[in-house]
Image (tube, rainbow, N blue to C red; front, side, top):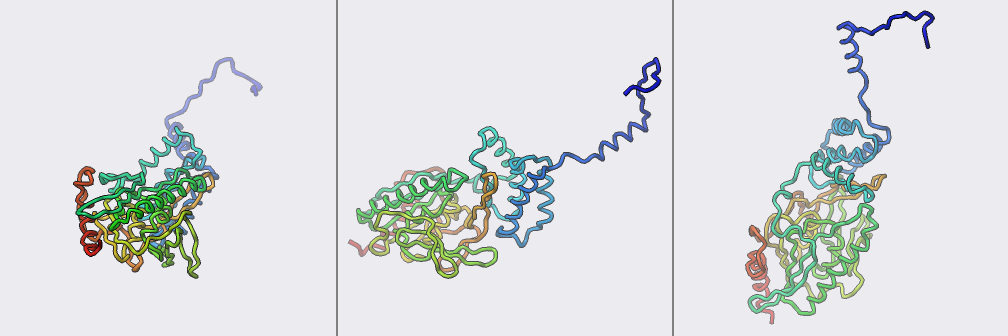
Length: 377
């Protein structure tokens, strides 16, 4: 809008130094870019799940953690923008097992960028920096070992990792894992071995249930261990007739994994040597704990990775999932393992992966089984 009287000369705005200072102060007082309501709701939902279920929830300063997490997401507009802040919150839970799994539908470039940001937040663990020469073990293997006139069944139980955040999509892979492992056990049993070598070295974890369903015939039936929650709730896990799962407080069984082809047990309880190393972690440790306290079993190798706690999966609205550490694992005798387990016979792992003929842990395990079966034909 033009003024009623316009001067013929051009007016040039001019600010005094005092006016300049005032304008800077006003700018500084303007609120910074803020987290969007949708992103804030998403982040707070993740924090709520942590506060309700985390193993160490009673010893965490939640108001302070929430302030820090929100500050790290101060410019977040979408759910994906909060992932680094969620990762930060997970690092403050006083354990190192919880993690965030990204949605399946993230474009590759975005996934790489977000993963890089998340990696900046979480410090590498000692287990990542000090992997054993057997890690990562990803392939199921089974064969016969011969030593001192004895024949041993050697089964390598590897990781059973989910490919998809959308858990139902993994069902086929999990079933295939359990069936293949069980089939290898049955094929080796047909050779009537003197004992069994269950090799968990390099097994960094994944889904424990297909592992237990597949190797259960060697384990034997019954309750194998217990999850102990932050509130003291005890949830036993078991194997029976090709099925692995948990029992509730009333003893009702929930089947989590199974195999379909019998037989589901071996004739008698065989001698078993369990091989462990510093890269036996998470579900690999749960399988090791399942053998602990079992008659006719002994473990050999190194202290395990220290992830002998249980994770529970909590899906988030955009397809991501929180895997929260919610309990400590205990063996069938009730002994708890908050930070991994020691083998019965401690032996250092070699610096590089040896051949079986020069594998000291394997040889010690075979010698032990041989000494236990001297009276056997």
